[in-house]
Image 1: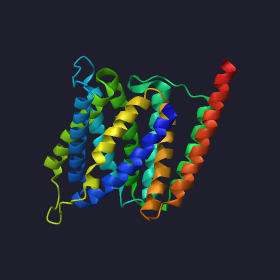
Image 2: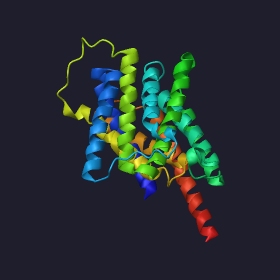
Image 3: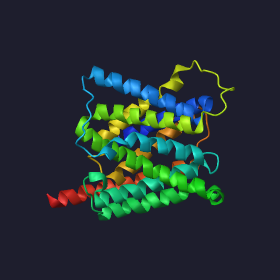
Length: 292
C-alpha cells in the first residue's frame, strides 16, 4: 500500500508542477510562491478545523524540525534559477541525482532521526538502474552553466530533506497539522524573499480569472500529507524512485492531453528506473520469503 501511495505522490507532484507553472508565467517566481503558500496555508488550516485536529506547537522538540517549509522554498528557488540555463531534462536528472544521494545517506546512517535501512544487494541493483536512467537524461547543456548544475543537484537534496523533516514533525504534532506548519513557514520565508528582492516588474501583470491556476497550494498540502505517511514506512531511496516514476509517467500523460512535446530522454530514463525498482522489489520479496 505504501508503495502505491509513493507513486500517487509522484502523480500529485506532476499535476502540481503544471498548475504552479501556469501561475508562475503570470505572476513571476516570487509572487507566485507567496500565492501558492497562502492557498496552501488556508486550505490546510480549514482541513485541520474540519478534521478537528488542534494545531499545537510542541516546544520540547528540536526547533529545526519546524523548518521543513523553509527548505521547501529553497527547492523552488534553486529550480527556477536553473530553468532556462540548462535543459529541463537535465534539471530533472540532476534533481533525481541529488535526491538519490541524499536518500541513500539517510537510509544508511539514519539521518534526521529516521529508521536505518542498511544497504542490501537489492539496493545496489536499484542504484545501478537509477544511475543509468539519470545518465540517459543528461545532455550537453549542463556543460556551460556550472552554477545551474550545482543548484539543480541541491534542489534534489532539499526535496528529500524537506519531506524528511516534515515527517519527523508529523510524528509529534500530526500529519494535517504538519502540512499547515509547512505552508505557514514557507509563506513567511516567501514574504521575506519579497522584502529582500522585491517582486520585480508588476506593470505587465494581469490578474487571471482562471481559478484552476490558483489551486496548486491544495496539491502541495496533499503532497505533504502523503509524504508524512510514506516517509516513515518506505526506505528513502525507494521512495525517491517511486515518486519519480509516478511523476514522469503522469507528466507524459499531461503533456499528451495538453498536446505538448515531452522529453523522450526523460521517458526512457523513467522506464529504466522503473525496471530497477521492479527487480529491487522482487529481490526483496524473495529475500523476505527465505527468512520466513
